[in-house]
Length: 291
Image (cartoon, rainbow, N blue to C red; front, top):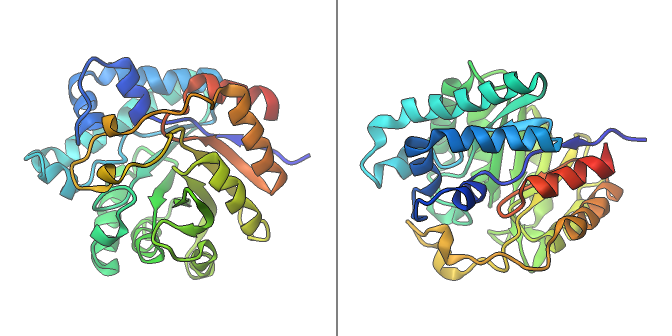
């Protein structure tokens, strides 16, 4: 029987649920600044639920995103704070690993806004070096085109820690990245760079169920963590959009999510968790069933 590693669930959306701060284009960072104790609570609850990973609240802590809100000067301090909170939760739990969440430049699901590959590589290298004293691995999340993934991998792989690449696919076609490129077009990156795992994230569980069989012959561990959004509205795919433009599904309870995860595992996944709108109770059900 293969060993399944349970990842944590969504961070930003879980913080929205727990905070009275109104979501905006900087929501998870604003909570990190104003209510950092909530971030620690989320990490602790995921460990308690059975997660083996604490994913730092660093997904949006890119220079370009902070600059839009005139707080680029806090780039280093915010990244360190988010990493320190995850490390503290891991140490209090007594086991587990800390993953650096490195989200896409420009914005989620908007690969056309990402910088050139060589420019992106330098930006990701800077983040990877900043996170290195704290984290056990780098999780490159929601990469939506081959070039966007390449830039992230080029930068993160220079630091010497394990790199996991996670891409996002079209909700209506799990065989294609959100750029429209075939999902399998990312596979050459695995032989070109020392990527240690390939995952699919922040897409519907139905789409990811289509993606996983396409990756079943990959020679590194594969995994998945879906979101629980009803759909990705076009308005959300604009710079500065906030999560309150999206609605959560009402049919994705813990049992239903675990059913999808079972399909991913049957297709070869050994890394399973959740993305936006998938919380500690979902992770607890995964841990109960698959560990």
